[in-house]
Length: 190
Ligand code: ADP
Image (cartoon, rainbow, N blue to C red; front, side, top):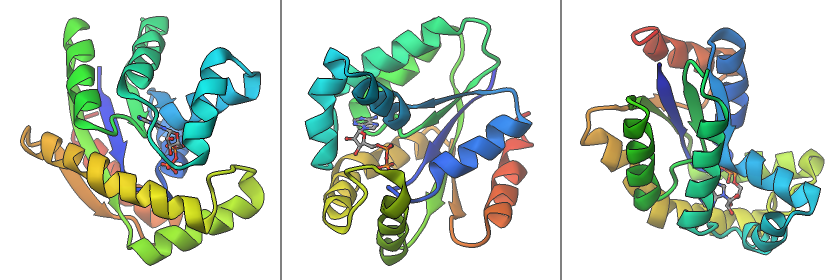
C-alpha cells in the first residue's frame, strides 16, 4: 500500500495533479474539499453545517473532517493506497491520520508539496471562480483561505519533514511538466 499526501495552498493544483495520478496509479483519491462540496450539494446536515464555514474561507473543525476521512478509508478496504488532497490541513489532522493508517498497518509514504507564489495563486483561484461556481473562489475569500493556510496548514509540512517524508516541487509551469516532477518522486515508491 502506498499513501501519498498532495500538499499546497488553495490554487496550487492539487486537484488537477490528483487526476493525473489516479489515471496512472491505482490509488483512491480522497479530497476533503470534494467530499464537503458533495455534502453541500446533497443538502445533508453536514453539508448545511459546513457550507457557511467554507464560504467564509475558514477551516471546518478537525473532528468533522477526521471522521469523514476515517469513514472513507473504512469504505474501501480493498484500496491499494490513497492520495490525500486537502487533508491533513492542521497538525491534529496529521496526527489523527497517522493513527488511522497505523491501525490499518500502513503509513504515509511521502508528502509532495506544490510551491506556487501568492500572486499566481490568487489569479488562478479568481480565474477558476469564473467557471467553478464555488462561492469561495473569489479574491476576498482566497485571501482568508491563504491566511488559514499560513497559520494552520503550513506547520503540517514541517510535521512530515521531521519524518523525512516531505518533497517540495515547483508548482509553476505546464501541467505536464509539473506532473513529471511528481512522477519522478512517486516512481521511487511504486
Ligand atoms: P482549496 O485547497 O482550493 O482551498 P479545497 O477544496 O481543498 O480547496 O477546500 C475548500 C474548503 O473546504 C476549505 O476552505 C475549508 O473550508 C474546507 N476544507 C477542505 N478540507 C478541509 C480540511 N482538511 N480541514 C478543514 N476544512 C477543510
